[in-house]
Length: 197
Image 1 (tube, rainbow, N blue to C red):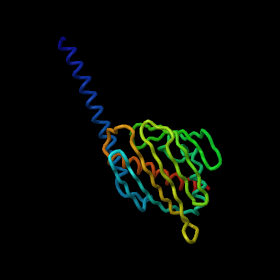
Image 2: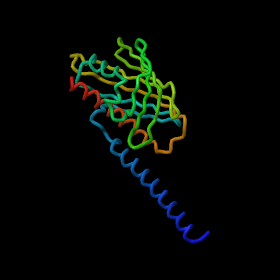
Image 3: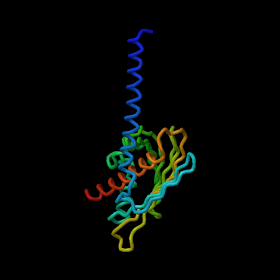
Image 4: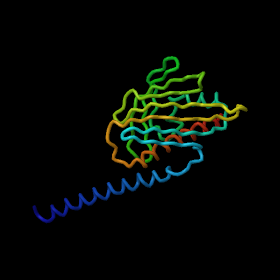
């Protein structure tokens, strides 16, 4: 091989390494914005056990429980409410169950695609959800709502168990920040809809 071909290969390799380094720096930089205390979260717990992550976030929303639950049950509009949701398409609705195609992008990570089932439990003020199809992970969880004694506020408790199906090339702290960002943006989306009336 002549020197100009070797120099060209070296230049391409250097650009590839620089791009990967920049992308890793970009993801970590974006994750740092979501790693500290957030005003929307009054309680938080994240636990890891190999490929399983258990998350719990709690928020207080200034609205009656019935209004918050009505917004939360409108899951097919997540795409309009929460910037992390790139797609929230209703596939089927049957009574208190909805099946959706969802695409989520947190931080600057790759977009993840899911087919999810959401179930409304009106008497318990709860929405449960689970993955039906996904290449990346299986998720199961719930949004549980509790009204304040005076009926003016709602305590929102989100719990989830995510089981990774594939190895993820990002540090756990970045993935935790991604989950936190999606949850906080969901709370902000609910509050925005409440303000719009």
